[in-house]
Amino acid sequence: MLDTAKGRPFHQVIFQLQLGGGGGIIRPLVQPLFPMNRRRPGKINPVFVAFLIPLMVIITAGVFMVMRNHLRHSLPAFNAEVYRNSPNELQGNHYNLDAQIESQLRVDEGFGRMLVVKMLDGAGGHLSVLLPDGVAGDFNSGQRFHLQVVIKDKGLIQVEDMAKY
Image (cartoon, rainbow, N blue to C red; front, side, top):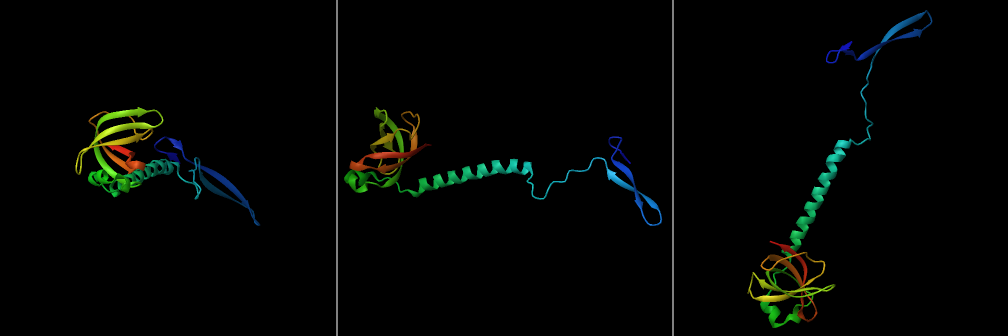
């Protein structure tokens, strides 16, 4: 038999001699020249793995983004009036604060930056916050941020996380 697309044989005929009690029988046995590779039942297709790995990375990244966004919205908003009346009562509490960077008061290597921010929600006004080293990269005056803050000892407002908006 010829492969009509390529003009070459794709089966071979082998004659098999079977000897029996009364004589021999010759039987033709047809076999393909190029047998198809059959994969084992337990073997995983590499194309499937190549598709599955990026899919899992995308799903994992999406879950982390949703969880981070959920944490941001699950914290209460910072209340400036309560803070100004008694900052020590808020010690250890975590809040969300939408603010605009006004100026930088001080920079200490290994400690961080002291910033003056203008509150964009609530009562408004200005606050000084500590931005520790390693929390954020570069920023300019006038940029707006969602800040996650914690009230430390003696009423110090420390930024734990920030995202530009």
